[in-house]
Image 1 (cartoon, rainbow, N blue to C red):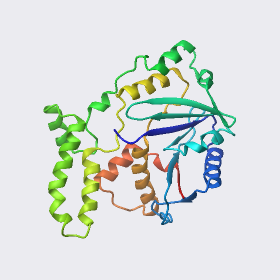
Image 2: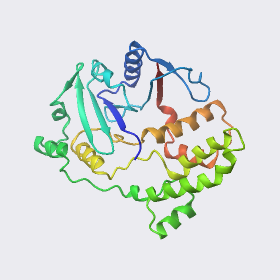
Image 3: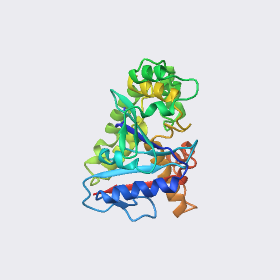
Length: 275
């Protein structure tokens, strides 16, 4: 699975206010903002700690913030608006509430969907609430050619197995070039592996993810509570920024696929900081 997944949900429709609060909190903690995307200023040298966020447009009375936060800032971020923090790792998941600058142990009760009970919430927190399996997890990454996806389905190849196979194939394909082109082929190899093996995907059928989905099913979270994920949005946003700078730019097939997956990526606010 990909690295730890995190999302913050602010209980407000005021997206600009969330952006200001988030940037202020990060800057007060010593972070400096930068813009690594097309038309931006690039990434400053010497940064040791990086925080990367995307702020989504408001939806269903919530503003969603994608990306792994600085855990020390979580309480202070809730000073202006109640905030929920959802997280998922390979082995566990959870959803916690911060309000008025502090962790609220019983805060989830306030966000129960009508018709659900505290007992149902408790079962969901224990991971004992049934959750639907995501059939999309059984598909290979959309960026793989259709013929490769069909062959994998014909032979009952799982995405993880395909990733390992593609890793070996790209290693053989670019291995000799690595020794001859001063690192260029090494970069190509890394990019090819990421593209073909589908790295960064979240396994939403893992036990930990099932627990989180069970929690989400009883809470009044926004409809976009988990989609798009950070990597998917980042890839689409990079393309959108490139097009904003060069409207007539010719897109590669992988860039077209990335933008198709999140066509409104440019509506998100990128907040990249480091120190």
